[in-house]
Length: 406
Image 1 (cartoon, helix red, strand yellow):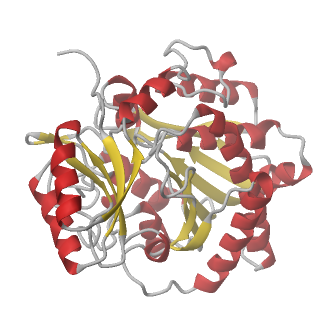
Image 2 (spheres, rainbow, N blue to C red):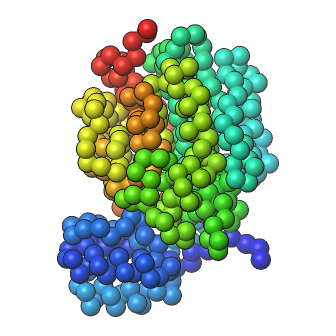
Image 3 (cartoon, rainbow, N blue to C red):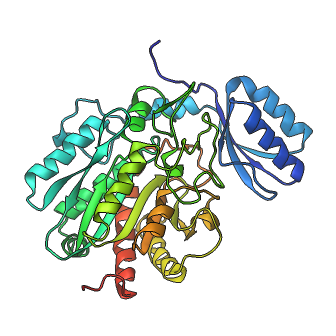
């Protein structure tokens, strides 16, 4: 069988869970039917829950909403329309690296070719190879280092395959650190070593172009199902809150911690390099919801430098607002989005002496009707506001004494 998954007349809704009965209803719906795609789990009264509903379940849903008196907002009536519109902004697979930009979305092959171009053309840029994916694709990136003795910053993107804006932002940051003449950017490029993996989940990213635009996981088979949520596969409260042991679930955590080669590659990199390369900062780029999140996702217990991370996050989101007016929230992950266990963010913070750790959930807002299909016209402004957030965040971390040279 050929072709891609289609979402014709799939509806995106947001429901308000106002009673225990509402919570139980949607918990049962998620457990019993694969025709409802949940973005988050029904957990508690007072929660807003976003759900994509298959076309053949719309009448059933309307009946449930009426019978249970559920407050419901329709965000989008046809998800396929968004995907079809996006198709025109995707460059062909054989697009040369010289035509790479931040006005379109690109296949993995072009991203890799563009990385090769940066490595070939700049003597302070070198290749970074972390290992191989399940399908045998390279987990690769690059390192930018202009002088010895720098503190290291590690940035990965696209641990979730469908979040296409994340690799776009990562490549833009690379481009600016290499080419920008802006003094604030030159300062960061000169005084830090930068390690980038723009497409951590290379298998899944390819799958979203070729098979299913809304695919989240990697592509490793698990019985009749396929894929693990790589951001639940790390060894911090593995299999705990916000993760599933159901192989068919979108947040299936894997058979055991680091069962997936992509998560194991991050572990090995930090095992080998966190101390040697003096890595003191870790960012992981995701979408969507416009959040600047520090650890933890699995417990409400604050991290030891919570107050400092809050100050850094506040400087970052202020810089974002001052760029194009977008409003982000900051705080720990469990405060700002939903409970989750086994994340790369919490793992790096817990297991290595890396005190500055953030997950950025990029555009759009929590109630965006576009889901992960961010219009290409928003790529460049998203990139610009995130670059400015890095300038503000890292300068605040400096002011707080985190990057003193030894």
